[in-house]
Image (cartoon, protein in one colour):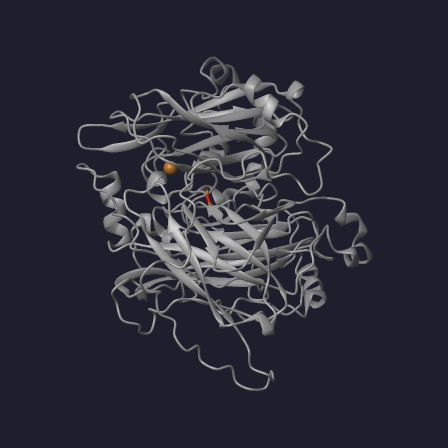
Length: 630
Ligand code: C2O
Ligand code: CU
């Protein structure tokens, strides 16, 4: 865990005080009575072999001897992004994107997230979500308010336990899961192999994409749920690692194009993170080829691609070979990024900057010009909007456990529909919008407390195409093989939109997409024999601007063997759509499987501001669900 952090030039990293002292840490922890559950440490078997066999869920106090692996401090303050200055921007450790975290698989990490925002308003509370990582081990740490946990109150912190099991190496990110906060409160999260990655490359670079809006976050949130409804407005710019330049503005601090530094004749792994709020983009490098090797934390059979398409929540890695020094006629090449499927096209750039200094000792010359290209854009990106790499992304190592068509127990169709009311606009799934005000407390909390909500009924759900109309959740049994069909429909005025659908809890096999209504028989011909890749975010496309209201238009299909008990969300990753209700909650497993922790051990998780939250005067009482010892 103590290996140095490799980074893109733009992302700063927090100081890791105790990386080199894991041994001491375990000893202190054990001494303090944290005892059982240290399952990954062989050392423990010498100390307390009996206790090790028992997994305890007894809360442990994270006192002054506890030191998290990372600390993230979330503040709200004036900030400038891409020449747009706002009074209130939510930042992580003072920047957006926040610091990149590098974790190594096979370890358990503790990440302390401070909500340093003073605003006492509950909706300004924060919840950090580890996008793409399964939080199966730690039921109250998935970071979904309304589903799995209470948000962190202002001036409090919460210790997230991340069990990074082997096989998860890949590209992820973390972000707030409250309201529109993730527009800036997000950062890269890279999981590295304990051993060697399956592809050879010299270094990696993170390319995190985000949007910037002219309106304030609170105006956007109020407008989206308000009556009259008010749209957020379109993205003002797509940022690369938090940087970008607006057309027509002069270059100044916080207003430059991002540079991605490379050296000649090397192979780089570029890790693209779709951290945009809204934008679905196509992108490519000027004069450099890309080979795709990873999608959403899963390695895929390498494919040469001429452009990459990425929606909110998706991640891809590509390998790029840089040019030989003698072949370079210039040292800067553009990365060109363009939105798709919006009323107007937003185009932005970053610069691939060759470092040509002869000696490593010579200070690197300040790049000569980082201004936007003038005139015709350097690249013509294809106009395609749907179907990119469908049926072409195959698992690098086929999973012998791939759930076959003959094993499918249920097909659940989630029909998304935009309801245009009397002044308001909402997104509903099977007629149920899930907005932050619907569940009065996180669903998992209600189930434990046995108060606001009853446990969902699989029978009721089966009678209603998969959704239990009373609890508005989708239940599934452990061991089932389900197909989840997300079906796009014409809105009340016949409009159609594009949606990057994201699943928490597990990665699913993506079965492709198409226009009209899903036809499992026809699709079987397309997927038969393919070892499909696992994903966590794939696109529900828009095949036309308009159709008949309520009529099916376009689907995306997933297959999943249900293995992880818990309360998980599946939602569109466009922040505006989430705020407008485009979220669903799934309960995997029966009551005994989902509510498997003794109630008395988790009291601290059950109330807003409960004892799991620390502050200046109170140490948090946290359960080490995965056995993490920090
Ligand atoms: Cu990155 Cu629930 O989302
Ligand atoms: Cu959407």
